[in-house]
Image (cartoon, rainbow, N blue to C red; front, side, top):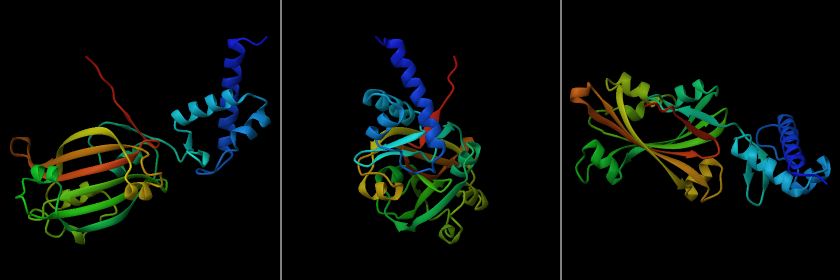
Length: 239
C-alpha cells in the first residue's frame, strides 16, 4: 500500500511536470482541465489540485474561478525602497510601460486634501494610469497633485516616471510615507487590471514630499491598486 511518502513524491513529481508544461505555453494560455491532467499524468484529483495550488501560490500559475488555470505573466517581487514604478519593474527584470487613463482637474478625496494641505473646495490635478510589466497589467495608480506648484504638469509626457517629471519641475521626491493594505477590486479597477470584480488586490496609500528634510513639503498623494497575483512585497528585518 502506498504511504504518505509515496503521495508526497507524486505531488512533487507532478509539480515539476506542470512547470514543464507551463513553460511550453505562452503567458495567459490555459492549462488542461483537472480531469485531463489526472488522465495525462495518472494521478488523483487531490494531487492535481495540490500541485496547482503550490504553483499558484508561487506566482507561476493563475487560477480564475469558473474559467480555469492559466500560465502567469510573472510575479513582480519588490523590495521596499524609494523608487518609481519604472525603476522597480526594471530592477525585477520586467519591461515597464504606462497607459494614461485620465489627466484632469478634479476634487481630491479627503486624505489627499489633508496631505496636500488644500482648502476644502480646492481642486487638484488627478492623474490615473495603468501600469504594465511586459505588457501585462500590474497596477492602477491614481495620483493627486497640487495645481499651484505644478501649473503645467498635464502638458508633460506622463507615460514615463512621474518622479522624473516632478524632479524636472523643481520638486524632486525626497521622502515617502506609505501604507499597504489588502482590498477587493472595484468593477472599474477590475476591468483595467483584467481581473474579476472583488478579486484580491493590494492597496498602497502613498504620501510624497519634496524639499530638504527640515522644510519638506507635500507634493503628491497617490492610491495604487496592485494585482495580488502579480505583485509581491519583500523586506529584510534586522535587530
